[in-house]
Amino acid sequence: MDLEKKILSRELQQYLYDSGKTISTAESCTAGQIAEAIIASPGASGYFKGGIVAYVDEVKHNVLGVSVDTLAKYTAVSEAVAIEMAEGACRVLNTDFAISITGVAGPTGGTPETPVGTIWIGYGAKEDIRTFKLDSDDGRDVNLSRATSKALRLMLEYLGEQLPKPSDD
Image 1: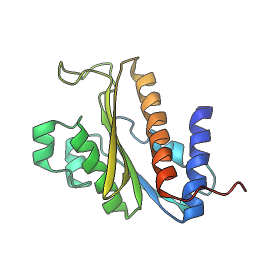
Image 2 (image 1 turned 180 degrees about the vertical axis):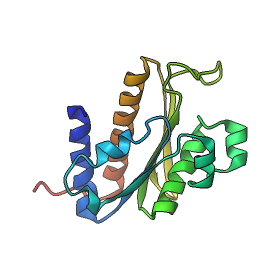
Image 3 (image 1 turned 60 degrees about the vertical axis):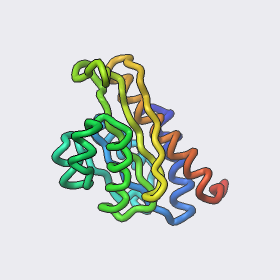
Image 4 (image 1 turned 90 degrees about the horizontal axis):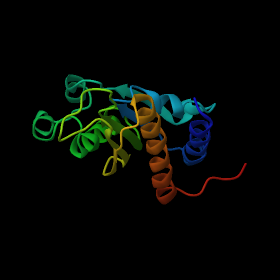
């Protein structure tokens, strides 16, 4: 794991540990990389309840509760699915916050409508899920690393709006 993700993990820890709030993940294309980054800081069990790798639509629907209609209408790589995945993670894992991610990391799998490098990130609290779209393709490894780091940074910004500033202990 690179230094940036370790730093982001430590910053997340400060917000969540100090506030007593919890977080979970619902990941498709990153297959657990966000969860791995979150638990890089000692003491993560105090705020990270778990993550669900929902790599296929069946798991998105059966475990996270993503609507079959949403999947059919928008496809798995969509803003709507990222929102429902994050909401589902909050609900299923009983957490205050969640990060979700769904996309086409490559090198194949893209379409003209959803090219390789299209990745949707969902983040926030159950009733306030925000989204961000990545849309550049620099190869699978870079796409996944960029998406993981961006998801962590977005969540940190969100927590900065929602929670008291962490102490500098």
